[in-house]
Structure formats: C-alpha cells, structure tokens
Length: 68
Image (cartoon, rainbow, N blue to C red; front, side, top):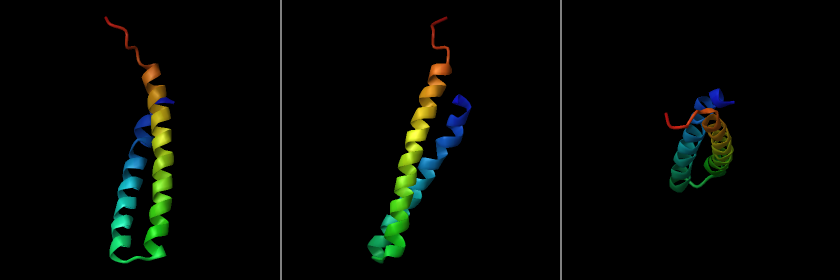
C-alpha cells in the first residue's frame, strides 16, 4: 500500500485548490453553480486527505527507521 501514497497525495491538493477558486467565484457571483461544485470538491478533497494519511502511515510503517 505504500506505493499508492505518491498517487493519492496529489488529489486533495488539486481538489481543495479548485474548491477555493469556486469559493472566490461564488463571492463574486453568488450562485448554486459555484457553491455546489465547491462543496463537492471540498468533500472529495477531505476524503483524499484521509486516503493520503492512511497510505502515508502505511508507507512509513514499511520503512526501516532503525539507526545504523
């Protein structure tokens, strides 16, 4: 599972960044066309963070951290 961490770590960054753009757009033009996708992007970004943390912890447990 440790090899999946580099794949999952980029999704929350991208999704949360794009959700921020939708939030700014909804401030300029209040509309469900901006607020609804922003909410779903935040939800997907949050789920991605959880997957990234899980795969990161798994990757860390696979490392040999003993002093040499």
